[in-house]
Amino acid sequence: MESESSSGADSATVPNGTNIVLVGFMGTGKSSVGREVARLLGYGFVDTDDLIVRNTGRKIPEIFETDGESGFRQLETGVLKDLSNAYRQVVSTGGGIVLSEENRNLVNRLGFVVWLTASEEETLRRVARSDDRPLINCDDPSARLQRLMKDRNPLYDGVADLSIDSTELSISEVAYGVVESARVYFAERSIG
Ligand code: S3P
Image 1: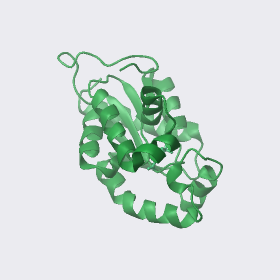
Image 2: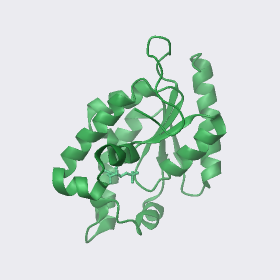
Image 3: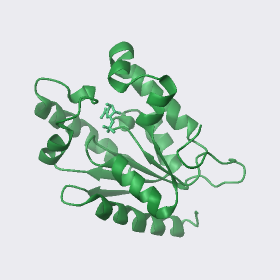
């Protein structure tokens, strides 16, 4: 699998866990923050949604429509497996990637996991203009969002090494927090 700036490395010579994974609800800034973190650290950047679109040649709403949510989730698992030898990558994930235990294990093995959060109001504001997110493309996005957040927050919490509330922060502020915490995390484990 190719990433934007480097590809996976030989698993025999590279320790596991050299990557930074961003998880969290849609609209929490995972992709923008991820790109900035990758830039600051000189890491590669990959986005699991982008990889799925690239691998299948189909857009996300189309995949949901033809293969259902479960079909999309299987594609997410495939992408995470493809990334299992990734080296110094920042991996931005789709908001539902934590739903399966298999995915949560795969995410944890990749490295330092950061959960980005934002308030309900701010999340709703950020995702309001998107029609690329079939799960909240409904009559009452606010109610749907509340339910999904309630179901998923414990899963994000369980998988994350750190959480950052992005509600009142700029992309660079969040990225700075991720970078500094990742340095400590990797140094403590002699990873890098
Ligand atoms: C989803 C979030 C989306 C995308 C898909 C499903 C979810 O990604 O993977 O629409 O289940 O929350 P973002 O979190 O990048 O918007």
